Length: 109
Length: 87
Length: 178
Image (tube, rainbow over all chains, first blue to last red; front, side, top):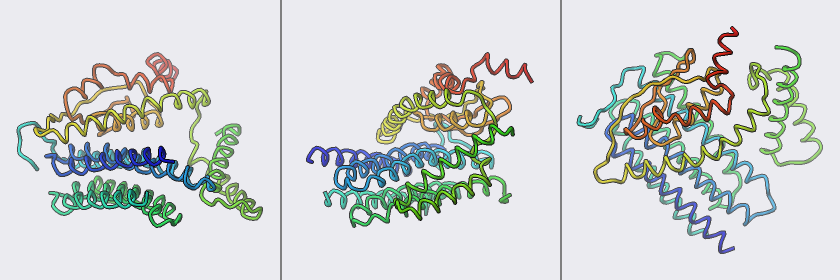
């Protein structure tokens, strides 16, 4: 049981680390397109790892309800498909409306 | 184990607070839209861990529904900003 | 659509709906199960062509190749996030964004969508525009190395074309056929 607790703690810790990195990137990067790079990639994996940790905890702590891990697995699959699609839709809207990308050496926007 | 879930909830709330700055002060509507989408994704993870902290299994259904609502909302907003109308 | 593909579409939609009903409710009484199956049958009869559209050969082989493609994809996701974490936490923030465009040999809807999703999830690139006439992609890259991995190596385009069986000679024979 201790191994399961350590594995779940490590998965939750890794998920929180990637989510925090995504948030810091949202504040630090100089332009809209680069901010989408930080959030669209890091937040997907961070949320997925947190839910994966909760899934493994449920598998060993409450083994009499096997349908809930299946529901959480579908939630992870949905996040991996939906988040990049929403990121691409926002980027396409910004590009077609004429927002100029940032080159090296300009000032922050 | 309950303590670890409580610390997780606190740290996710801190990251939501950090993203809120970009939602308030971002120059233009696109930065604010991206920040709202990210806060929605973090809320889904927050709801799942909260379901384990309070030991109620109904939070997972709410998380699933909110994931779909957040996705569709972001797509509709991006479509409106691109075309100026919704159809 | 021919009747054989219509039957396949109805059956696939019915199976997916039934799986979701059992997954989301978790109740196994006879009454709930039978009413669920009746609802799934009505829904799949009315709107089966929203989920399974068009015709394509060799569906089973493509599904198997797709299942083999997914673990490589997951490894690329982990590499991408470590790369972004390095760029964010470095005190000097080494980024140099640029926009590139290239052509591929894919023409169908599903394969273009898979490649766009994979480009968004790999280190340093996000898809901006897709033009389905000639398979053209506009991509925003965050540094020179990520742009080179897409333009020069072309690993991902070859892998996705191999999964959906739309490599160079197959696309040329398809266009000569029309």
